[in-house]
Image 1: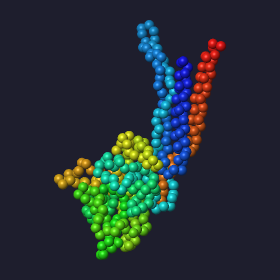
Image 2: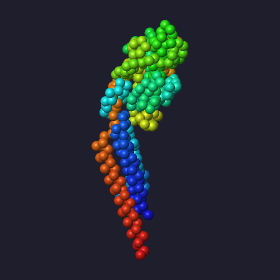
Image 3: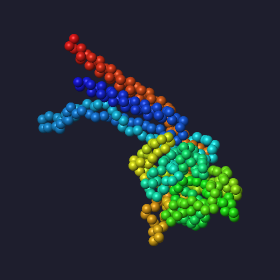
Image 4: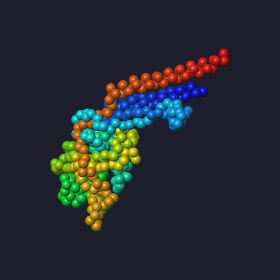
Length: 357
């Protein structure tokens, strides 16, 4: 029966409005979730049944327009609003929030970053609730934060526009951030021993005359993402390294995973790496110059333009309660209207069945 098309359209409308209410419910549920990015749903028309395709005019008669009957609606898009949220003061020295676009990069301790694809294998997050656990800088879920460490060898990092030439320069190898090792040698007992850089430009840990990580005090992070602490054994200031930031070509194209995490799939495009406020520049994995003196085409350049961070703050939720309550009323009424179509269609079918009486 032709009139059952109205029922099919109403059913699709009910399903789509239910999906919209699911989006609203998730937004409201996360009104106090740090770093949450609210979602917006849009509808699209469903398929059409063409009764008459229409015709062009002739010398004697005018043309006719197409005649089509639609069969409801569906979900068009569910978009992430990646704009920066309000700031929430926490008072914790290691809490960080990004001022503008970008993500912190987190992963496990053993990921080898040797290509752009490897960078895309890291997890992205906007929530910078950091702490030191077992010598590593980790977020609230225990994932290790990635960045650039102080190095014990000459390397081609271009910090402040100059090539690095001495102990204490920042390596441009993207690695898990961790404290320097603690010297166990008699003449340097307790001093900080920094990572080295191997022939491939990858940071390597010292293996001799070390005894775990340094004993640290007064750990802090500044607006450039520089991690500083005091060596408790020597009272010397130690620059651990810098936090890395990643920006994607299409922030709305990132894929949500568990909790505050995203992955940079194909829709997100490529990742550009930087340190906050461009505090570290150069070529990733320190491969800036090949043996023949030319730039290595396979290395990834660190961006010269990076946004800054703020410490002792976390980014608040992106949920706007006024907008969500308004949308909830609209979707509720839309759902209700579609149920009325089903009720009316049912009454018409009942009258049709009763004709024979």
